[in-house]
Image 1 (tube, rainbow, N blue to C red):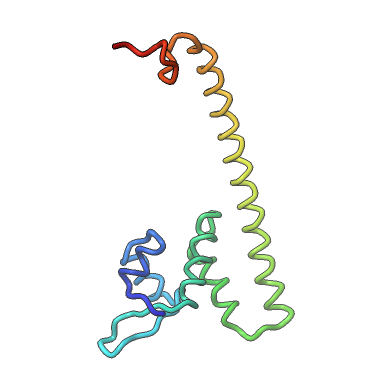
Image 2 (image 1 turned 180 degrees about the horizontal axis):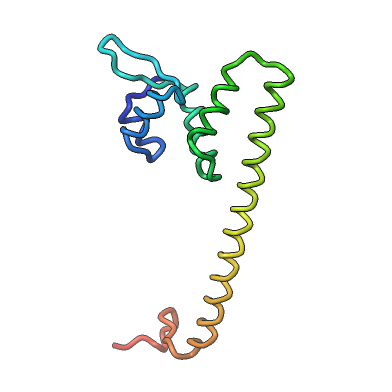
Length: 134
């Protein structure tokens, strides 16, 4: 299956401009149809998924491009090690972000419980028929 720029951008909640930019800098592979329009296949979907995740870890586009270039090269011990190091750093960043998100969610849970305790009894229970007015 192939996707147009518009369809592809919508799949990843990206702009068409962003998708074109990624193809222009050689970060995202695409094919061209007879009218020279970009078409994206499942390989591009996998790459865009990776780009999205790497960006969410805070990795700059320049570094993502470096990783992409390494993946296009012939596999060697040195190449695989370089790719591994990049991914290991980003894994650490992802775990750090997850820990921060968990701490934030825990704080919000605590604050909700705090206000629920304060408000207990002050707000009528709409599920109790005794509290329904005619």
